[in-house]
Length: 424
Image (cartoon, rainbow, N blue to C red; front, top):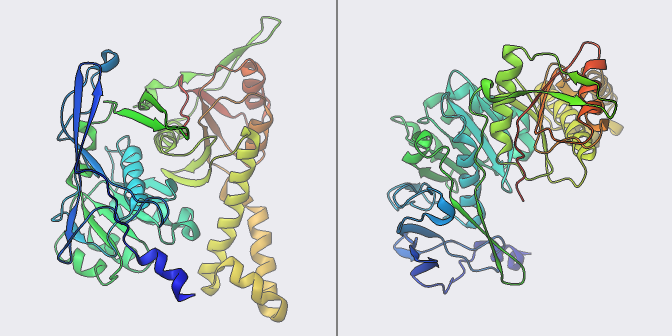
């Protein structure tokens, strides 16, 4: 067994060159491999997605592209790729590819949430939970309790300097990475007690509004060695005024229009659509009061994704009840209940409360990264107490989808985003 564990401790020599040049027509983009002096040794990435995959991180250092007539992100605007030894306050086992791509995708989300203190906790390049609030502690606390199970070993990324209250929450849990634009005095002492925690000081996380709206050149590698180039996703919904009133026209020429969303519903939809930019498609997000409630990711059909998110909401809601009542996870409680009548009674009460309160979903809003091809996904969400929905629109059955919202009692609001937010 110890030999198997060794694979996760090893550092893979990457063998990649120190520099890389990408030629796009007449434009040359020059990149430099990022390495760090860790414990007296010069090291690059620990390894790639898996321990037997060598990997290297490159930073754009020279060249400005006008490919496709676009203005792209430029040298000097790096956040994760510009990480220096000085910004690696505590290296832990020093980062691998997955650690840094989690931080990068969190920045991708937080760029749209810059106007308020916000926190995102990521695992496997998807958010476990995200929230914004009037202060950083509340944002982090709400993000954590969205899914404390998935947050175990995750990356905590913040858009405001880490303060003492939030630091104590981080120190009380197991995370692999914490990244913030700055750290208040004494805070590093609190979190550095976790020796394997990677602590990253990334000033760019406090200036995300400077790059928000400017795309980067997104290069996807194919399994056959080919490449796909695309403009990165740029969120067009920057304020509640950017949403489009949802309507649809039937084959008979009858047009139906959704009820108007309330101010709070629009704010929650705005927040959730920002988080959607960092979620693997097909995906949906339930949110309430500026925090995610449940996130469904990577499903092949949309109604299935809604069902997955609902299942997760019920499971996580019951887990929180169990943890707060007896200090045990839902799974621990389920294991012990058959041999303990008192715990069995507690488990029954928790499961009944979860069903009665529908996993905490009533009063939430829902966003979907793609349109609803049928009304089944909408009906499924409405049955859980959703009050408002945002989706791209453009389906042949928009009429049926809007009608499903209008037929609900009470009526459910719907808005269109006018863009899809797939992330493959």
